[in-house]
Amino acid sequence: MKSSRNLILGQFVLKHGAVANLGMPGMTMAFGAADKTMLSKAKEGQKVRFHLEMIKEQPAITHIEPGQ
Picture 1 (cartoon, rainbow, N blue to C red):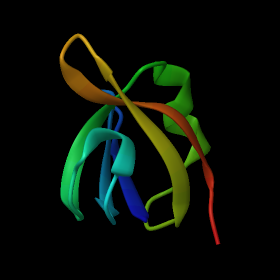
Picture 2: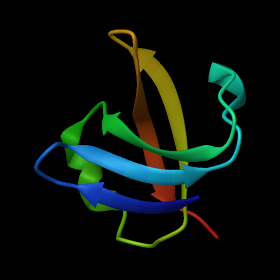
Picture 3: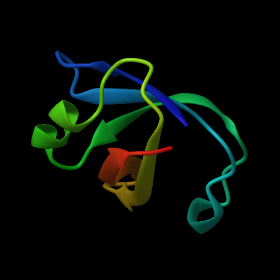
């Protein structure tokens, strides 16, 4: 998945494949970060691995790390 981030809104924009645990097909979409300190863990255009969970009825990134 390729990433970009919006530090003002506290979001990552990810171009991702299917997200099985949420039944979501592949797409490009903005996701909020459950913990805003995670925004420093990914750089623009970097491939990442991430985990999404529903928080307050919205998909949010709960884990992100550099990918290959």
